[in-house]
Amino acid sequence: MIAFEWDDAELYARTLAFAAQELAPGSAERIRSGSFDRELWRRAGAFGLAGLPVPKTYGGMGLGAAATAHLLEALGCGSNDAGLTFSLAAHLFACVVPLARCGSEPQKAALLPRLASGELVGASAISEEGAGSDVFALATSAVADGDDYVLHGEKSWVTNGPVADIFLVYARTQPNAGYFGVSAFVVEKERPGLRVGEPIAKVGLETSPTCSLVLEACRVPKHNLVGQLGQGAPLFEHAMLWERSCLFALYLGSMQTALDRVVEHAKTRRQFGRALGDFQAVSHRIADMKVRLEAARALLYRACFKLDRDEDARLDVAIAKLFVSEAAVQSGLDAMELFGGLGVASESGVERFLRDALPARTVSGTSDIQRTLIARALGL
Ligand SMILES: Cc1cc2nc3c(=O)[nH]c(=O)nc-3n(C[C@H](O)[C@H](O)[C@H](O)COP(=O)(O)OP(=O)(O)OC[C@H]3O[C@@H](n4cnc5c(N)ncnc54)[C@H](O)[C@@H]3O)c2cc1C
Image (tube, rainbow, N blue to C red):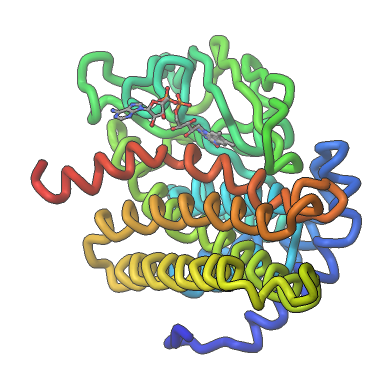
């Protein structure tokens, strides 16, 4: 068991109960129809979940990375609507965290309380058709014109895009300045020239709406620039440190639920006159699931503790992101296998662990990219 300095077991228990009582009911229907539920989002906001790391002065809970991750683990454990919790986490780490870190005082005062309360949904748009893993190759431009910047370009894979009120858009402000030529802007959904695409059907996380975004001569006032001109890339990297660690705590929670379910199944399902768990091939597979989960937990919280101590967490975050996402996929496969035919039946809910885990290896930088970051940290 990991000990937390803030040691708020009561808050963890309340979050687990909230997830089970408020987010889980009706999830099967929402998943089937792929619908985003704004009312549930507001309830999650009222509980505090849309503003976990937001300073208390701006209406958040003021939690650090480890404490935030711990509550997301509770959410992942208690709710079987992984899309909704993924959307909440994307709102937090890709939009709210960078705004809280580098937003101007008026930006923070105007936006953070509304984002933290669940009134507004946040999204982040950096990926493009030609800039996925090579994310700073982005081509969307922002050109100064009087008191405004004018944005042109097309973004892909924007989580929360179809329902977002606020987009944190990364655009090139200096054409030949590479990493230092990218800046971040707040773009409100009402801005003329901003167009959101249709939701993209996905293999899992169905209730997390994702779409492309078109910016056509989209004007934003200069005061919508977040942080300094040319500081968008480091800001994005900071957001990714939080996302690649804290967001993936959701998967610790779902791995715990999968483990609990297979243990129960292995005790009660009988074949050849014995409980499944009596067969060593079965019990060893479950033991491996437990080891994988505990290793994932240790790596993820180690990365979070480093973030909280303001230490260089880049290597730890890359290791954690890689390990947790691969572990979630393997444990999803194991759970499916251990339930036999039931494991592939949609109604059992077991196949969800795998379906919701599959995108984890791609989002927030693929497993290959995490390996590249790890190799780079080793001097390769
Ligand atoms: C569900 C979902 C939600 C997302 N949400 C957002 C969002 O909110 N905002 C946003 O901006 N983006 C978002 N993304 C985009 C996501 O960050 C990208 O999909 C991801 O970075 C990979 O980029 P790509 O899809 O272009 O794949 P590519 O970069 O084309 O990669 C394809 C394959 O090539 C491999 N590859 C590429 N380059 C290398 C290399 N140098 N070395 C080794 N292997 C390499 C990759 O690992 C991968 O296996 C989301 C994606 C998904 C699936």
